[in-house]
Length: 345
Ligand SMILES: [Zn+2]
Image (cartoon, rainbow, N blue to C red; front, side, top):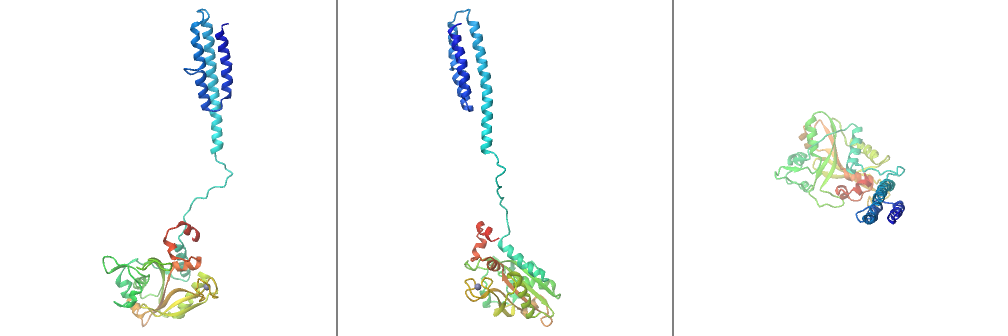
């Protein structure tokens, strides 16, 4: 047996031992280069075949070929095994652990203004009021004139207005023009309506005032509607909205469309009247304006003021959300800061 055959057998044994040490696809690829590649050990060894005596060449060549095939077969098996190991390792590293708690998907929720508005409207609906939808863009006549604001009357200055290019068409400054629309639609039938919606005033934005805000207006017109009815309905509202046992008080005020007019306060929902920062140590919270519908407004709505009487009130929705949820700045409402919206909704 020639020396070349001995070398071949040693290479075979050594190659198999080296292959058994490979752990990764990269290592098996490197092994292939070392032994079976164009400059590999087997190829290099076989260049010595030509120096053998002619009669020995076929037997040695045959053996060399068997070893080459055996090594290729062994490589294939090793590659399959390392690929399997690698996949198993990758799966256990990146796989899903079904015992972990899930991630909560982000869900939307109602804006605090929507929640408060629905709560307010719901209380009045349970008392027999129905919702009347009125336009957000109004004529000057509807927003002011028919509500008894005389032209040039200083009361107009109380509500700085956003005008359009048509000076008669404005963004409504309050929900009160809806009173005229509701009355004109239903007169001479008695009505009880609430009118929720957006309003605009061209004011500096502060912690207490936004340019855009929401109001709920209430209106009752009938044959024998009195100031006592107003007080009873509002007391019922406050007890539902802020908890039983509320006290309310009326302070005289002025609005062109009601006579007499009042500001309505409720005892502080935070301190119960003892005095605190929220009520500015007065024990009372200002909630809304109200009053008996002015005879001129009744007439403009289509009711005979000699036969009909009525009352109306209006309140800011954000103000109610502020009081119920302890928010201290109206500007948070429309900043679209999700952290705020998630906290209070
Ligand atoms: Zn208080």
